[in-house]
Image 1 (tube, rainbow, N blue to C red):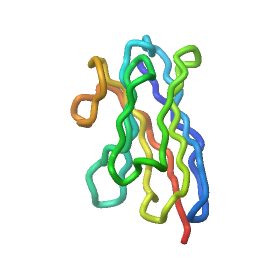
Image 2: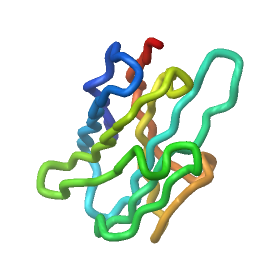
Image 3: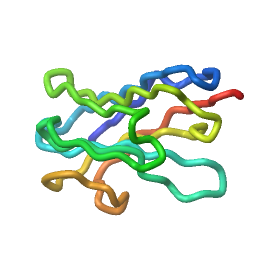
Length: 124
């Protein structure tokens, strides 16, 4: 079955940087749009960023635009989220997801596969 495995989460001070990665297996990675979402206790999963299958087109939530960068390496079956100038409100479990749809996918209901999540904690 398809596996998405996130890594790179951790604890960082406000203003710092962190990069989370998501390695996919058992799917034709280059044919999937990829996205990052985040979730805090008691809240719905929130869209963060998405990239199309080529890696050329990207889209971001307003709250992270200019601070986060999504990218992918189709040879390594991996999608990344570079997070700079982190804020305490960025604290969440971060999930990567894969969608078989073409283009940029924002709605979480349109993603077919999900990772298990990685915790990112930003201290003030």
